[in-house]
Image 1 (cartoon, rainbow, N blue to C red):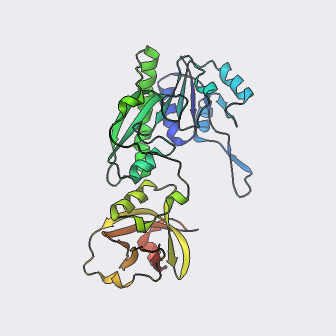
Image 2: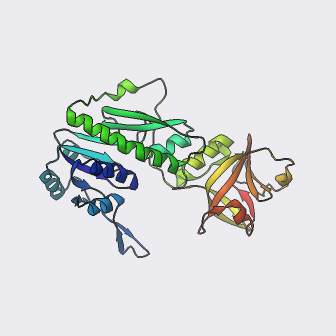
Image 3: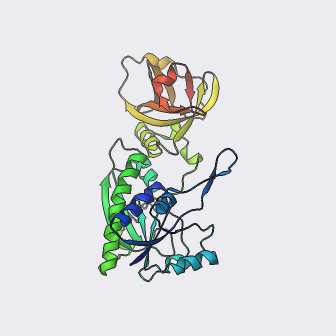
Length: 328
């Protein structure tokens, strides 16, 4: 069976690696064009999938546009029986309908929940205690195709997006192998997603932008703020406005934790001045080498942070030379 693999980031490399380890006939890889990096954008950086494919001697296609006739001709020349997509782009029908055995995708959530580009982040932000992975055949809409296999995995209370990413990357690679074996043997049974629907409303997983990552303290409880921060850590990172040494700046919060009640509340007098936004009850509490955000239902400890233009560091290190007097 001739397989074409489509993917770009590290998450996809593990699945491609397992296909190669299993001796499966990967005849080509499709990945994003090299990315221009550097101050002058004059250095091209290959995707992790491309780097791995070249190391293994697998032909690589990097189309700018997936409907380009030259790319389609190259893809058809590979004569794929099956295509596998892991963390790539939305494919047009002319691409996903090409192989006689179809094209399946590995999705980092339990479909039909969390359709979209960022399922790992949103499952943690929403405070879920369980997630999983799904393989499904592609169709005309995003993440709506017939489900082949699903597996569940817990989200620990202290897992961040990187932790869950790594779990699902490994688990997903094994599910890809299982799925290929089923398709190859003719035993794959694909089920319409309507059969997986429950009374629970569907939660989307849209792409995350900078504005998405702003911590809106006035809307959050301690638990929701904690989940929001770990759901965006370490990348792209939840951020907030602060007053640091008298100047307004942005600060990413990479790690936080619900704080035990302070006894006594020595820092309660340091609330900062001029919190912005009506009804914003959040304020800073300095307690020795800890920095807490007081919210209506308790305290959130800011454990690791990164001021704009600075390195990530433990809060105790930051506080040795920086006074954070306000947060909003």
